[in-house]
Image (cartoon, rainbow over all chains, first blue to last red):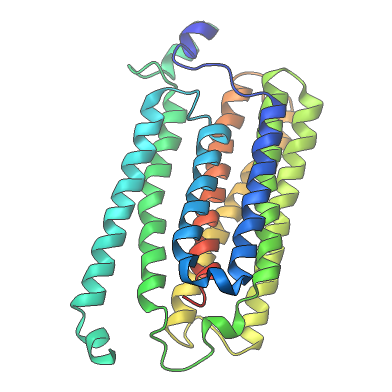
Length: 107
Length: 198
């Protein structure tokens, strides 16, 4: 029964793997804050922080949320949710940045 | 009802447990909720006519510590899950309590931050920054608080012996929610705090 219940799932990572991921998450967070305080990197602050955040997001999703090991339908659900959220994000940003009368007046 | 029949009742045609699938559907819908709140914050950032402005109140070092605490609570909950999966209930209880403590510490930092902001003159209705900031971080904090209550309920359920059947699945489902709260904070920390001068 257990095999049937988890037919599409592989074994979860070991505590050692979890610890390595935790260490990487801490290091990446430290790098994020370091980049924030370095004046010479200010010109590229946004792309650097976006990439570092994406790395942390992916590590948690793949290893801690077990998407790398679980049924692919869970990955699809997260991707659908994330893409829809990103769509809402871009649509609202465009709507309020380029067509909202109050913000246009303020600009 | 036999164990096999009981377990089959919780499985979908995809051969995944419907409770876990339900949690993933919740997470997908929550992505849109937080996406809307984050973009609202970004739209109104820099539009406040009166102060305080973000750069005057946001405390990066303090928030870095609370971020670290929340990240480590994601680590501790996977250790709790690993504990219950191998039948080590003592390890499960230890790590689930540490996770709840991490969540409570994060909420303590947030309460400290909100109090500091109010003392500096920033409330929910002070300006559009205050409104969008408190709405975003407050919604996230509420999710953390719900998670802490859920964690403690799992701990007390284990004390009463109610995590024998489907225990690992219940903890796995809760852990998914907790990790989602964590990844949302990863985005909030970057967009709200580290983009403060952008």
